[in-house]
Image (tube, rainbow, N blue to C red):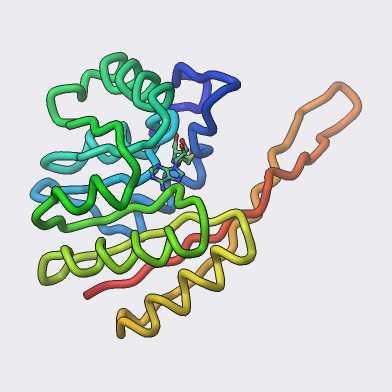
Amino acid sequence: MIKDEDFISSQEVPGPSKEEIRCLVLCKSQVSANDLVVDIGCGTGGITTEMAKRAKKVIAIDKNSKAIDLTKQNIKKHNVDEKVDLIKNDGISALKSIESMDIAIIGGSGSKDELDEILELAISKLNPNGRIVITAILINTKLDAVEKLKQKNLNPEIIEVNVSRGHILQRGIMMKAENPISIIYGKI
Ligand code: SAH
């Protein structure tokens, strides 16, 4: 796994998803060398870069041009730029131009309606045996994502990850909590 500090980051773009979260996303997506991965809302490129190290190809989408630029820098830094196609567009329009995929990652959505349409489109384009993984910070996104996957008969699962990092001080160890994040995932 790549260390958080080994990503080029910016105050203007969220991410990278923390190492422990990236690790769980890889695990729950069951990514392997033949997979085509689409990362919707690639942000800093944390998940895109990790996926590119393991999958056949990654298509990374973000509506923010600064996110696309940062992702470009990170895939280059970690030598996986040849495996990644970057699309600067909103998730819905970008997904319409993609034929099929093995893994869809949703790292950002926008409004409830946008999330609904992104999920609808992504699920409709999943190959047989395809997987979808959503990372969510808002309670609303967590609920909406589970509901949608349930409605589509994907048998969703959800885990909530609460990582506290230990800061080793002279006097002792102080644990500092990161934001809780849910990972919602399902399979065709
Ligand atoms: N997983 C990323 C961080 C994702 S941050 C990493 O490891 O670096 C979420 C991103 O989703 C933001 O950059 C935001 O611009 C993008 N986003 C939000 N809604 C979107 C939409 N509807 N279409 C495309 N990108 C979107």
